Image 1: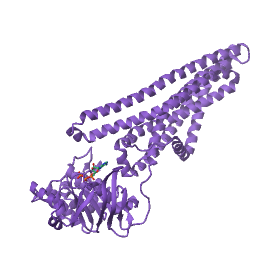
Image 2: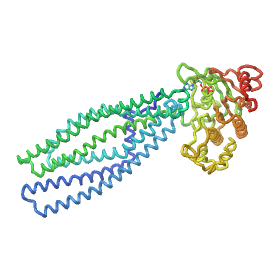
Image 3: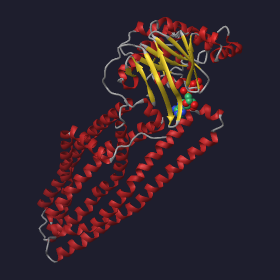
Image 4: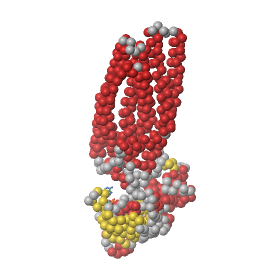
Length: 584
Ligand code: ATP
């Protein structure tokens, strides 16, 4: 299964740059506050250096001690205050940027072409909306601010060291080659590792969610062992991916820690020697050594947050990647002049070389009620998807008026044609909210009328809070048949000219289904209704019946004409009646 795209490094960098530019002034103010706090943090080492210097030259008076201690006290207070302000600003900024990223991502997800989501499977998208968003939240809220703070602290400590004594500071450079090369090695080999880790989570959550969603099928088909083996395989892949990045850290961290110890001891020896040989004062030697001890902490943080930043970067690449999916239809375009749907020599294949529709042609008049029937796997649902403009034909065309359905902007398409399948979804929210999704401006009486049209008014009125009853996974449980009625009521509210109903009443019992279809067709007078049905009473009630078999239309006509023809439809009808459906 192909996954959704992942943005390349250049795109991610450009995206990050835009984000920073959007918040430039807040960003600069935050860095300034951190810089001031870092300057305050430099004072104690300098004070200790001064005390050592005075003590070594017998100049340590009580006045000097009092002044230096007062300075120490003031700088600590200043540090506490400034770092509080800086941190507050950085958290607010982090949350703002994160909210912006999340909203952008949500917009991209909602704009994804349906066919693309189906191709990629829900697991990938699920993992991006959960694991990647979480990883990015950690990065933007903590890793990035902490990393920037550490950079500011390290830079200012370095500048202070150089100001005190460039000569003594030289010794601290001893750790640089170790840090530089080990970090380069780490970044080079760990980045693909983190990417692999995130992909493995996506695959795992895909397998788990698909198994859970299809639990009944898995059970019925005895696929449990197979699915368990697949999940174990996915877990193994995650395990190896994590082991790899762990190994990288195991190599890298000790090198980093040893480099710090090396830098401190070499600086101590070197600056001590410089002080003994009177090249620098003892105070300067003390301060520089203390600064080297002090700089280890921000450098350590710079390096260790790189880990998180790496993960954040791979997550951002996966989130930004969703936005790069090209819309499969234009955003504007002409509106069709008529509601005639013409299918012209259409062929369609899910997999190359395996056509499931072959050279199908059909014209559907506005206001007509057409039933599509045929054996299982004949291609009825596929034809329904093409008629609803969800998929584009491989060859031939499906036209609404004179315009190809697949080139209509999504908004226009949905105003003209809508599809309801057996798969329906109840969103978390009230009954009213669930219906208003189809028409946000709908008032109470429109919602009630829509419910009446699908025979649902009675049971909705019987709910504990009527229209205000909360539904969805955490709310009042509705049966699949009731959910199907709500899906149809949404369709009534959105009021497209053409409705494609793919087994849209299959979950209701036959009598209720027929009643619903009749009340629906009273409301939908003048609308084109294309109903894909296994229950032949739908075909009996329709204006015309179209029989599909092995990807071709083999018969088209009214119920009576096809019975007279005594072909496939007549045989289907006889067998359906003999199954005891005569009265329903
Ligand atoms: P049913 O009455 O069982 O729903 P149908 O007549 O609606 O069947 P379709 O669902 O259109 O038939 O399927 C037509 C053919 O296309 C079948 O062979 C099916 O296996 C195949 N098919 C359907 N959906 C896909 C898909 N997403 N990927 C690959 N093949 C598919």
